[in-house]
Amino acid sequence: MTDQNTAESFVADPIVENVRASLAAAGLADTVLLVPESVATAAAAAAALGCDVGAIANSLIFECDGAPLLILASGAAKVDVKMVARQHGLPKISRADPDFVLKHAGQPVGGVAPLGHPAPLRAFLDTDLAQYPVLWAGAGSHQAMLSLSYQQLLAITAATETAVR
Image (cartoon, rainbow, N blue to C red; front, side, top):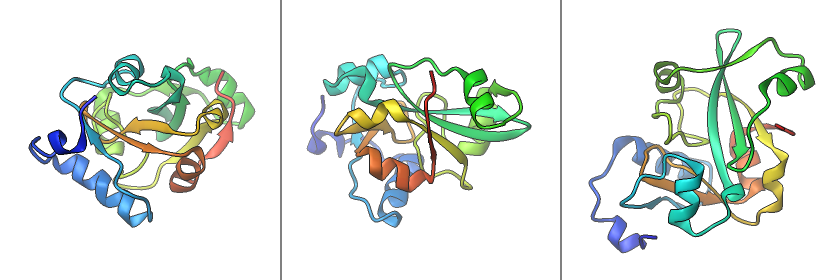
C-alpha cells in the first residue's frame, strides 16, 4: 500500500479531484488514496489495501429501463439483478456497457466512485457491507480508492438498503 506522501507525486487526475471535491461538499474528509498498481477489481483493491475483499464497496452501474442504476455491492458478492429487480418492483436490470457508465457516472468502469457523478443516480446499497467498520470504494480512477463507513456511504448516495444476493 502507498502512503499519502507518495501518492501526492502522482499527476492530479481531474476525475479524482472531482471525487475529492464531492467528498468535501458532502462534509466528509478527503480519504482518497492513490496507489501505483491498478485497483480496478475488488480482489486487486483488497490486496493493495490489505483488507477483506468483502470490505470493498463496488460501485456498479447497471441500466434499468434506459436509466442508470448504481448498485453498491460488497466485493465478495455477485449481484443477483433479477432478485434486486423483483424486490423493488423494477423492470429488467441489465449490465451497462463502458460508454453508458462513462456517460452517466463520468468515471471509467473499474474506477467508479459512489459520488462525483454528473447527476445523482438512483442507488441501492448492499446490506452485507454494514458488517465492516471501514469500507473502501473506487475514487474515479483505476489507481484511486477512498475510505468511509457504511453510514457515510448510505448518506452520500441516498441509497436504498437491500440484499443483492
